[in-house]
Length: 225
Image 1 (tube, helix red, strand yellow):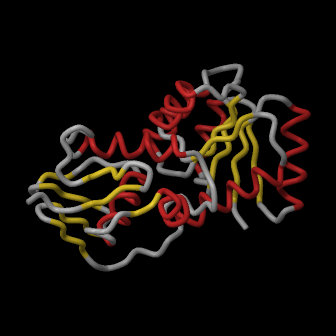
Image 2: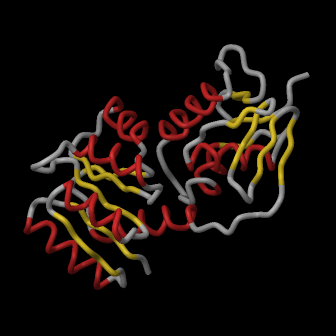
């Protein structure tokens, strides 16, 4: 299945998830401290990191930022807080997904599979052009008017999918299925990533140029007239 780095300071919880994830077919390494996890991930990158936020040596949010600064390994954050502000903070810090405690090993297994499905997609050796937007799928690079857009992985995946369907309204269900690789999910996650994408493209939702929201339906990418 996958090589998982499990970062959890509670020994009982860590051992239980180690056993259950291994039973589900994963190769699992573990760490009880953030700095140990960072060293482990840098020395031998796993397929995915499961990061608990309540660590004894370093705030989990800071550990996430440090990890994201040196690696693009997918990160699933485990948090006890499910408020909107907290979830937005985690996604802004670079989390690919999150789980609110308590959760089962089977639930975590499903999230790991979903994250890996979207990050292991084979590159398509082609470019997509919509107006002055140019998307190189092979290099995973997007340019607008010749300037490179600094996009996170999910932002790029969302933009590329919208570009493949330029001129058509893409529903939220399609975005969840084709970008997040999940049959269901939280609209808030889509809204957050769409907001970041707009900002990086120099747009506002009240004055869109490329990204147009169709209320109650979805999003459409189209070249400005």
